[in-house]
Image 1 (cartoon, rainbow, N blue to C red):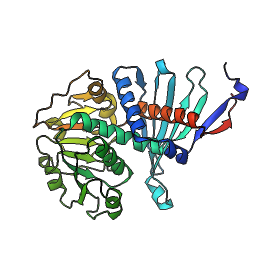
Image 2: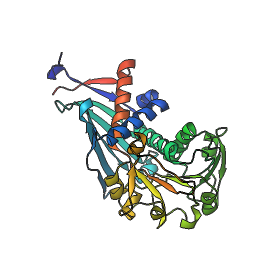
Image 3: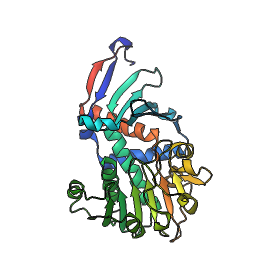
Image 4: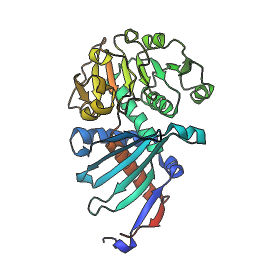
Length: 326
């Protein structure tokens, strides 16, 4: 029976509720589904909005749908560095799901935890499919929220990554970060970033994307790199010439060339990771090949994770419901 427009309600999931409902394996499953939907072209990704503001922030919208599943929505998100002065999180995100038959909003969700978790899960899936299986040494740039989740999911899917070196922006150790991963891996602070890259099988860059983080010659044959920080025009983390030497994988070709590392060398061929996960394209990786996963984040990832949260909230009855007649 169709709900009367006058009796319609909107479900709300705040950050605390999202945190209670978020479960790593469920997130991995949802993100994997998003990649496959994109590969099968069952899920659509609409053009990205990503614009700087006079306030010093960056505002963006990622949206899409899966028509066969009745899934429609967007994430409005961005980065406001001045929030740190207020003691608040600079990354802000909100997800909205809609009924595609009527256009009415169904659920409004705090999107910060969604963004963090789905990006970590996407990175781990990239590692699982692209890095050499025998990889043991990892170099991580960054110690923030995203760096932490990238390492957490990487260790979850590739527990053989035992030796981890991390690089900080000020070259000083981060004791809080070290305590967070105590017992999960051999974590040590690296002051020579080029040496740390050269000694690693896997490199993860999770910084604000202010410029190249290391020199081209530091990257050794056989290295895999997950690049998270370039998500806006003008951002980058990799040195000139690296993509031209590597086999490049992306979440979406057009989007990567617009806002990812691929914006700097759009002529370089790239393969969408969804085609690898769905086994449409095999990964033929020679031991000496350098591989790069240029991650810009798909709207479909936000939507499939949001739907998972909504389903779990309905099952557990933990969403806030407010009248929303239309």
